[in-house]
Image (cartoon, rainbow, N blue to C red; front, side):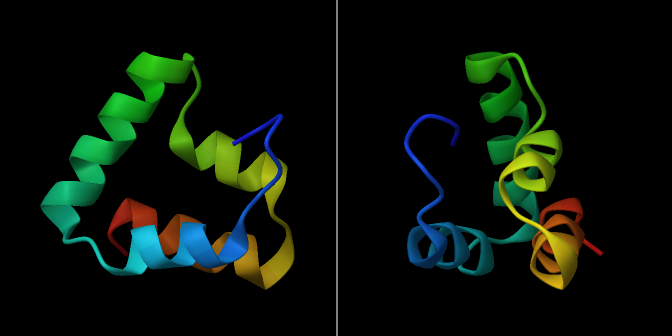
Length: 61
């Protein structure tokens, strides 16, 4: 995410259109690819209720 800016529409589309199983795989692959958790990346690039909501969805809550 960092370096490219956060493309909110793309981020929302990707996250909300995936199942819990897909999101677990995406979290794992993101960490393998970038050496940082997807949740940490979301929290550093987004803020407030928007960040909290995306994190809750990605965590499967």
